[in-house]
Amino acid sequence: MHGPTTVFLLVLVLAHVSGAETITGIIYCDNYFEFYFNGELIQKDPMTFTPHNAVEVSFGWDGVSDKHYAILCQDYASESGYEYIDGGRPQLGDGALIAEFSDGTVTTPEWKLFVANHGPTEESEQAGCDGNNLDLCEVQENGNPVNWAAEDFDYYQWEDATVYSANEAGWGRAPTWEEGLGCCTATSPLDRSTLTLNNGCSVNYDPETGQEVMATVSESECLSPRDVLGDSVAVFLWGSDLEKDNRILFRYSILLDTYSFELDFGNSTSMNATNTSNVEMTNEEEESTPSLDITINGEPQEEPEVEKTVDSNDGEVAKLGGLNPASSSPLHLRLQAFAVGAAFMVGSIVLQH
Image (cartoon, rainbow, N blue to C red):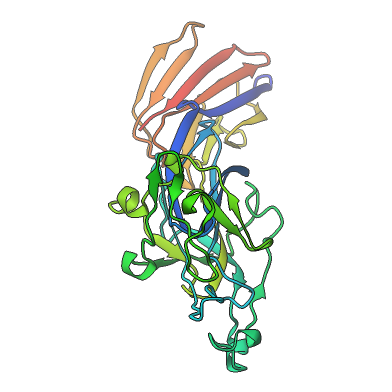
């Protein structure tokens, strides 16, 4: 005969214990980039054309959120898709992105991309567009999707990035840092000439006004890409067309481990919980020993060895080893069970590698 019904309220709290940290990195895009982390704009490339500069970046991470990297990369192109259109030798430029970060994130084929601007189009080339007939050239402007850099933006159906070798993508014209002048030497995307303002240092060509404008550039934003990324495990990425894909949006995310916990109180219905949840369940037996099954990213974990200690509140602490979360830091699960008509129980579980 069953005894009185016992209702357990179980509170599962899952949290990383690594704490907030500062992540640093280096980004090189031919020619210009904008970098976002978890939806926040972190850095704009201060040099919009040449020299081809790599830029140091630094930003905070709270230690518990998923990581969402987003980079807009722009290879200069006129309305025809060509550069150097006033110099008598128009050509199609080639873009490239390579980046690495101190948390281990690097550009790899797993990054996704959206081609926001492409051209000249194949149709316009069939109609006679080439370097000698720029008026016949057309580009396809797809626009930047609304909130494309946001944490919750669904980019997973975007195409995979294409990997290029350093020889294919190239390191470009490395910058030099000149005290008193800044990042040198900038050239015109119209005719290859050296810009004249400030001796061609820390200056950009503004295609909207046709004027040279000063840029605020620090030495850490004027790095030689080959010097700082030449030995990196990161790879060059771009769209499938190295020359005609002009503006590309890149996305990459690191999702933290998803843990689920199932407690089975004898003949009662099993309870499942993922991450942080409050769950009520009913146990119709007077005495039963709950069992805890743990799943990480959909993979059931073998029963780990348990080392029990006592915490300051006289609650039981069980350390579970042998688990295999993808993240490097231990995670804490606190299990609190409040029983109606039965003894009060409290304990916590530390998930460790």
